[in-house]
Image 1 (cartoon, helix red, strand yellow):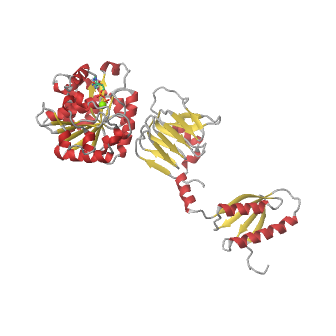
Image 2: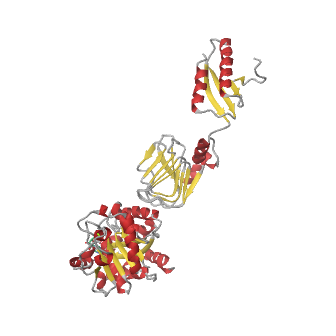
Image 3: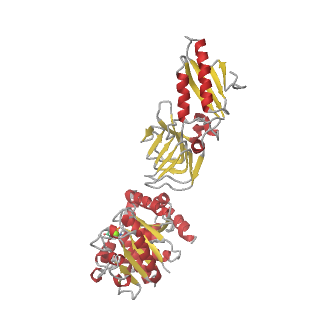
Length: 227
Length: 267
Ligand SMILES: Nc1ncnc2c1ncn2[C@@H]1O[C@H](COP(=O)(O)OP(=O)(O)O)[C@@H](O)[C@H]1O
Ligand SMILES: [Mg+2]
């Protein structure tokens, strides 16, 4: 191995399996070639061993989905190895925008009227009402400063932790992730307390006092979330 | 240069045509030059309510398709010397005979000659609605105190808010029956205004004289003694910018009073 000073691939055994640090300056083809070579040697060593998880650290290299698949295939082809994670410091602009959209709080000042749909990717802070026949949809949580009289769908991409809060909770329909609640099971008697809706341990949407949320969803406090 | 106001509702039969006829007449009585435009093509009836049916020669579609000038198609209401005119809808075509751009041009032309151009909108949210709204600067949304009517009004307000050339719409609640509101069988005015959150321009009682007057081709507003007449006259004055308190029917509800102040007192 005299064609390089530093190896492109460095392996470290940890208690979680095998961590591979992949050089992020060399060409992709060189990287793949060396990885294949190194794994071959490795494979010969412990022939009949148990399954080993492989963690790939890409540094500042961006892999296209096709390249990622090629890498996984290459590793999968070696007897007892399986890719557990691929970690890169970089992402495409689109992914970054999507990430931003899904984690930001969008505030909108308007009345969502009958027939209108307001859809945001992150959390929604609505300064206004949702009238009967109007719909608000969010990838994250929904906070309504006015009255909710229409339909609200939080966590629309499958987040069951998402919540819906409103100053006046009189919805036609509540949805969180894929759980739906048409006739909310709370006291119908007039009350002017803020309320919130969340999915409980029985996979049911429950409506309760807003103040419970801080205990049920402590993560709401955090302004930035993990990717 | 006048102002064009579209009278709309979403739901049919709530009183758009009645409101157009009466507000137009009231504005003419107050000395304004008014042109009423019936855009309910295929289902015209503003001419009937105004008692001008027999004098129609040309209609809106004739104008748009260039068969005559606007001036020729306008029907003059002889009761108000030179103050009130009607551009009737065509009875034989349908709504697709006119495009929004054409309506806009037509209304623009009428605004040169009249202080107010009142546009009577057909029910629905399709082409006819788009035509009626195309040339409007302002909008009046008519509703009755029924859930379905309020729901449609809400939908219409949402659509109007997207039309940048139209100022925020104002509300007329029509056909209020005091005893039904009191017994809780009808929505109360407060509730409707809060729900729709737009300014209240006026409220009109349910009054069989309105129907009788319309059948006779004499808008109720010509009879100065009826409550509905006073309500329409008051709305006309509010359109002119005066602050007129709501009449007694309306202030029977205590909470209403504060709301009236909120909506009109500050103007
Ligand atoms: N305030 C009122 N009291 C009683 N009847 C009314 C009132 N307003 C309208 N009407 C009646 O309701 C019916 C529908 O009114 P119209 O103005 O034609 O509605 P639209 O134009 O919205 O379809 C008509 O018969 C009319 O006379
Ligand atoms: Mg009509």
